Image 1: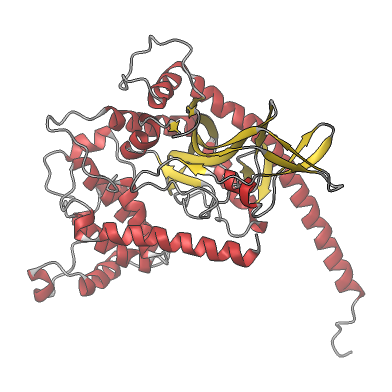
Image 2: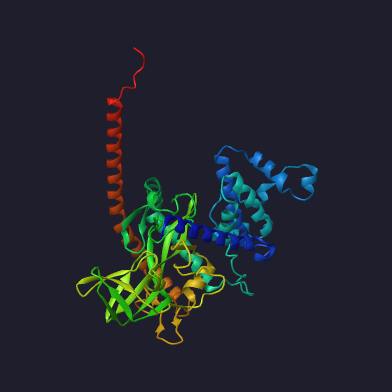
Length: 472
């Protein structure tokens, strides 16, 4: 894939995401009034933007004056009274919405509840903070779980997916504190080092050489739009499950370097690999993300191969684009191709399920919310073929026993995740990730420092040998 093709596909993906956000920002795209926890989360987003603007040297009165001219506040706009931004903010610069904070604000009229006003405020505050307004509004809609219809039941009791999402995000903060992830994120930002989600955290990626990709920032939410599969952000990660989305039936044609060919029976299945990650959600907070990469399970003549290739889609085998995958078989290296057409599982409306052959970036990131838990962890994800085998999802956290009691009662990936959270396997998984990532990061930092010192010495030697002298 040429750099121009990659850039064009990337820009088209960004335009598609932005169109979705713009549609949701419309009055019909979200409820007009926010519920208790939602309005506090929206107010926290406003507070984070105000904090960034004030750190850049703008006073609170200047911010309110700016907003007053552009938004106003009913009759107060006509009277010229100052814009009362505090009505959409939390007291004491709070940035995390906890159960205690919800209880503290219960019954209070402020922060106010109008979804439209929060979105309009973010539009202008983002411009003042030097951010993209659509990105800021999209981050708020994702955090508020407004990408789907309101899920709160009539009796007011939270649904299992709401309980589990809150539990996972609360535990992410505990893990971050116990494992000192803030220090890790700061170091990773300084070095700009990600990792390869296909090969493991011991394989680091230099983000400054990956195009297009995201620049990792330890004080901002991890951008879901800007990551390739070859360069995952430096977030501690645990594998959760594998969901089939594409299938290709043989025979497969094998071609070696000498041009010799042979055909062998087999099949290939493309999977979404779902991971749980912990990463920054703001200047002073962390949260949980669902990270998706892909992989192809190729079976040829009874031999099995996992292809962590560039694209990881069965279409790559059929089309040869961007290149045909290679395997080591029968003592030789073979390029694999197939004349059959790939078959894909029907995509669910409203979800980002496009296969890697149709869009970039190839790596997907979604904050853990009630909707993402329901869509990716509670929905059945089998692949039922009209003329072929039933391809089941793979539960990487299948519980050791089924006597665990939790919020999620139905058999699902969500139930396995909750059991693993309660029995400590998640904590062990995050520690194992760090045990592999940190030694590689140490070596990366040493190589970087050594190279910089060499370049500094070369620069000084060149300067000393030059004749940039003044008049004598």
